[in-house]
Length: 346
Image (tube, rainbow, N blue to C red; front, side, top):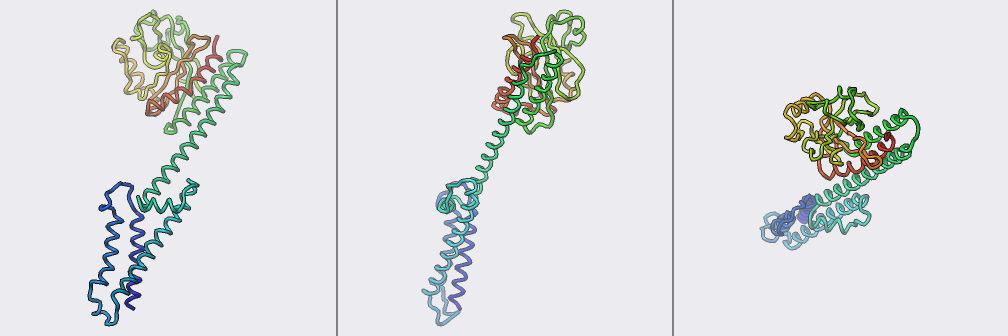
């Protein structure tokens, strides 16, 4: 009876040792601080009770050596059995992600790090697979939209027909930005074209103290398929060396021939050279707008700038929160800018 109690005790402690050690940490600790080593001393030390203790008070016929052997044998069976079972379970679960992962790998990972390491490693790999699949889906979606736009870019016919096709291009841009930045809820796009200022469109000019001096401007030409806001125009600076007076956003994109991204309209940087009254107008204007961020990209046709593609969102960071994200999305927008340029050139 005493030997059975020793065996059951060893088996139970072996199982507990295996389970407890399996819940290890990925932190690199010195060997003497390892939870497995500490636990091993405890379970081995428990067997020493059979050798050092006075077991004859419990049983006159008990043999200390046999009691210790029964304890240690079943301790080993419980510990190694538990570890082996968990290693096989881990292998089967993990091989769904890594076909080359074996029970031996799982066992070694247990001995070095514990199950938490295997679980985290599997979670990270699964996240990488999901990210790769999402990127593949994004590229498929992007290429489908781009192919359709390229196919329609060369459409001939009346300007009204080409404007309708351009609106479809803007819808495609909206869909792509939403897929590339899933944090966004709302995205709108529009196209502003470069025109000579006349008495008719000077009445729609914003952010200028002297509209009569403006010779060229950006005029809102096409919005995507949503509700179209009131028409407006933005003055362009034509004087050589006057880039410091360029307005932020679309005029800056046209002046510098590059994408301009504004992460938050409430934190908009405005050149100090711009008159204080105009700067105040700009700030007041953006306070009243629904969109919180936007990006402007130049549209070129025949080697000359013809307009700007604007992408705006009711959330901040329309092109993402990092420079890398913004550059990547901007690069994907330029083929659509080229399509707009071909469609809408005079």
